[in-house]
Amino acid sequence: MNIEKKNLLTPSEFTYILIGIVFGISAVSLPNSVTASAKQDGWISVIIGAVYPLYVALIAIYVSGKFPKENILVLSKKYLGNVIGNVLNFLFLLSFFIYLPSIISDGGIILKTYALPSISFLKIYSVLLIFVAYAANKGIKVLGKISSFSFLILLGILVPSIAILKQGSLLNVSPILGGGLLNILKSSKGSIYNYSCMEFIFLIYPFINDSSKIKSSVLKATGIVCALYTWITFISIYYMGTTIIQKTIWSFFTVIEGIKVEVINNLRYIFVFFWILIELKSIALFYYACIFILQDIKRIKNKELIYVIISVIIISITMVYYRDMLSRDKIDQYTTMVSTVYNLIYITFIAALVWIKKEDKNEKK
Image 1 (cartoon, one colour):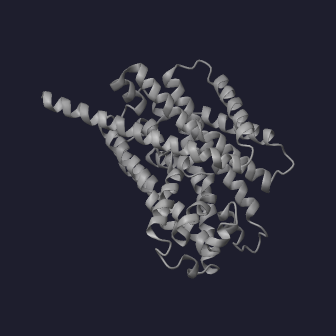
Image 2 (cartoon, rainbow, N blue to C red; image 1 turned 60 degrees about the horizontal axis):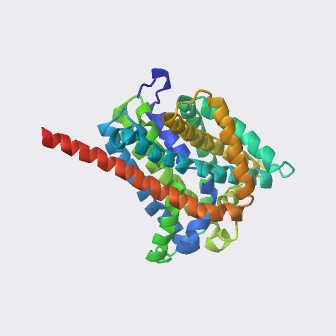
Image 3 (cartoon, rainbow, N blue to C red; image 1 turned 120 degrees about the vertical axis):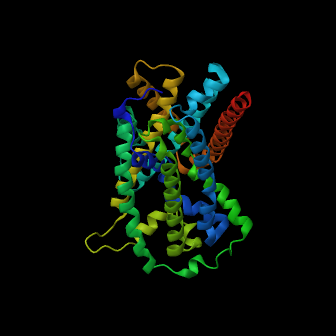
């Protein structure tokens, strides 16, 4: 791949991008899903679920070590030919695209619930997509800077939640392993989907300005996301207990509302504002992934027009099929599973081809 020097990412930008595409708005309801079965051990399920992004990270480290300047799209066509390679790459594109309606729907519902009750969903979605399309069109370097800034905002949201340790109870997270091993494993399977899209690594590792830093950057991103998810889940259980969590929709919002700051009456609105900013960054990264893959399959002359077309498609899908949280959850139950399974097979298959071809070359020598 021929990449201009000005578009190269620093190792830290690379790390923040990976954190940004994995860590999204679903984090605020993660405690709800994992405590349904694992109860007070939901945070353990989240840690176990990190096995998936770790696997993706290790595969990416291996492949990038062999081909640091060729991403998975290039390797797919290199080993399987343009036709089959492009088909697999297009399916890879869809694995990112199917998240967009769900994420936008979630963000829209939160905005309408807490901040903009009188504004229609159509207007909310349209404004959100204008911002993210503009950011995505600026390229990966700009997204790297946005992701870096977004991470600072994220820390600004999460660090104050440490104060909740004074208000919760250890009884809410006790006894450890009391939820039962099978239930913990069952919930860990669900938490895997929250770690999805770490596969974005395979598109952007050629953009890092120092290939020797890929390993440390990828592992750092995986560790940070796991730590953030674990903390959100643990502190939510510690503060509320699993019974109350199951009665909420976005449990971590309740945690934030419990933070007492003398000069601020209600942190909820500030939290929602910052969280939406974080979510805009995530959507922009998904947009970029879709356009990047599409452009690799077929050269795009007018990217702005493609962004408009994709935005119209996404808004239409969201308005028709993601009208409320119940509809969204039913669809997500299947789409996230299919996407994760396909990506797992796809990256493993390409990594296997890289290994086989390497062995063939060694035998010929």
